[in-house]
Image 1: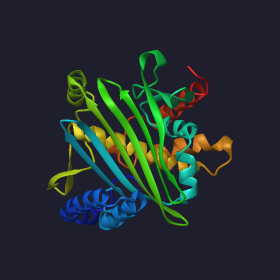
Image 2: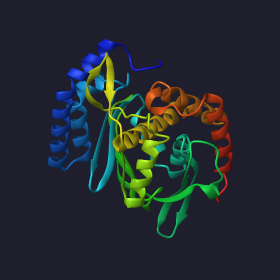
Image 3: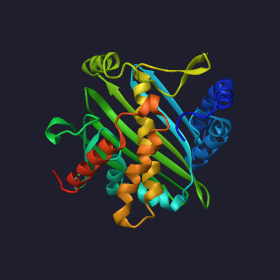
Image 4: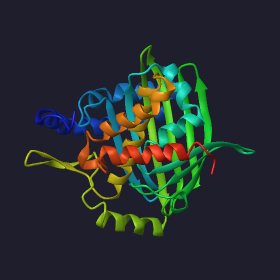
Length: 303
């Protein structure tokens, strides 16, 4: 489905904004109060029950973002129609994370490697078009299994330095089993930016990114159309959403024969992003597919 659903859904979402704000506050309190991470994540699922069912995504998810002096952060909560065992085994494997991350339009390369200090993902981040590795920024993400239980896990990918003047680059994921066929997932994407990074972002927002928006409603609808947030928070919202769609597309193709998985995950990721063209459209299908085929071949070799 292309777009955001009919006007009735938009009105419902707008009227639920206050409820969502209350849900966020309650979720934060529950997370702090509970010493049990699995229990806390299940409690957040209950807190977000209404916005998970009625939202602008036509998917069971909630996306939040914030900008502070410490940096930018996006948090995405989603019901996943996959057994917990499948989610856990896939997303605790550093090699599989590279299969997830290469779907993102800005990821040029990803290779998991063991070092004396632990596992790292060597990731190159660059343009939304074909690019030599030497022209893309290398980010070394330390991969950590934070927690692992039969019904819950958490992994953390973090780097001291990120692309374009960013630091404290961080992707965190936790998930909990809900039923034999359903998992609840929480994805966090965050980073800090120095003066150079913020200036680069402002230049982007006034040039290539001037027409881009995020997913948060910034005010009442105008002429029946949503008033989406723009600016720097919209950037973190778009990337958080791209990483989530990559995870979902990877999991949806994981049971296929190995020779078919990557091509199917590409197709699913592209189709999913095209459901939100105002925010996520960058390339047509043929250009995206050919670029990613080349990058996928390239990342099979350590560089």
